[in-house]
Length: 99
Image (cartoon, rainbow, N blue to C red; front, side):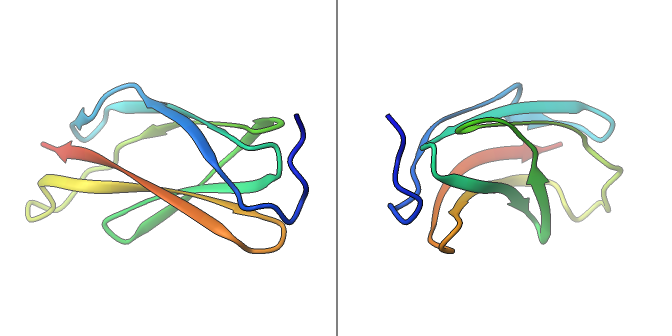
């Protein structure tokens, strides 16, 4: 069923290849949303990355973890944000451990 463009966006599910990562690792993920979601971003420790749309309500990304300063280690929350064309958002968090 197609959601109206101005309906509240929904994140239906998300998967991530690993929640414990090291610099140089490639982490991949898929976000499934309501059909009216226009964009999805992933953000953590001040960095925001657009997750490319691969189909109606489907977004996917593969990301290589960069070298990080020594003080950026531990468990953080990866925020997944979905936005519809009206600008309404919904966010879900995933705990990620940077080692």
